[in-house]
Length: 144
Image 1 (tube, rainbow, N blue to C red):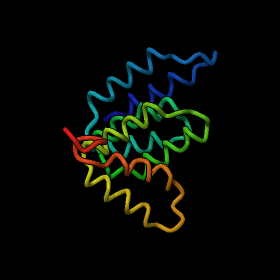
Image 2: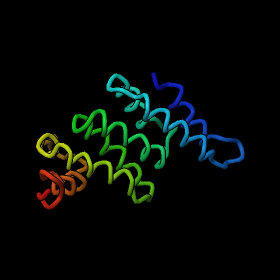
Image 3: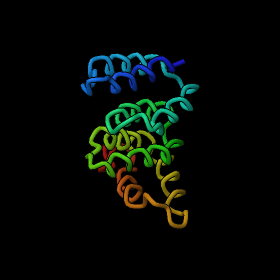
Image 4: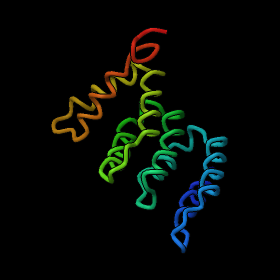
């Protein structure tokens, strides 16, 4: 189970002097990535939704969620990505993980995104529409 690594990621940001333990957070994240399985997806989603995280930990946690959970977790991922934007961050790493997901499973991703768009008043429409443009086999231009 990855609970210890998630706690280490959060603890590395909550140091008394306000100075983030970057090396400690990255080491915990590498351990988490190496051991996380699909069975850990509920814990990863809970972590990305936790009020203890920030834009950086959401960026980090998005990677294993995208890798292990794929398009099934797009709703939670888009919600977490929006928090970073609301806080004024560019979400470069987070967006890169979402694009990789769209390229890796374009049909499944498109289906899930269209399902989200079909909801009345879905609040992340713009992000969904941008990601839909990436749901093409073999990448954004549709060519290998």
